[in-house]
Length: 108
Image 1 (cartoon, rainbow, N blue to C red):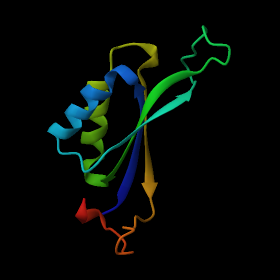
Image 2: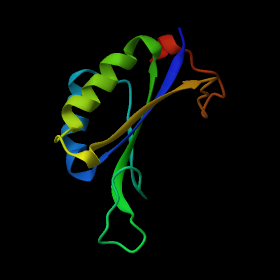
Image 3: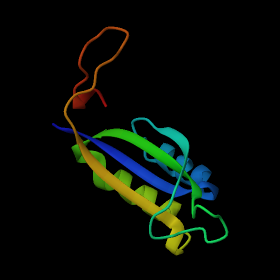
Image 4: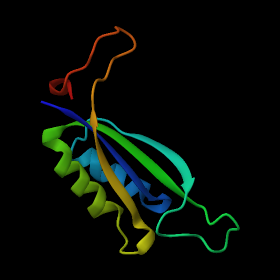
């Protein structure tokens, strides 16, 4: 079984709702950080066009990706252009620092 990295950039106001939904479906883990940038949606009230969003990162087995992506899109959307994006990337390997061993997908 392969591991994937799910990266979502969402509206800051939707973080709690998305976190709640991911806990409900027992997502394997979650990292959240603030990020600043622009894409299709630009903040024309800022000189640099930047907006602040939340970035979520989840490492998950390939078999859970559709469920997790669906949960993020359902709970993170308010139906506006600046709702954000979700990307799924392959993961070659993950290692635990404390024991220096590779983690396999079944452990997620």
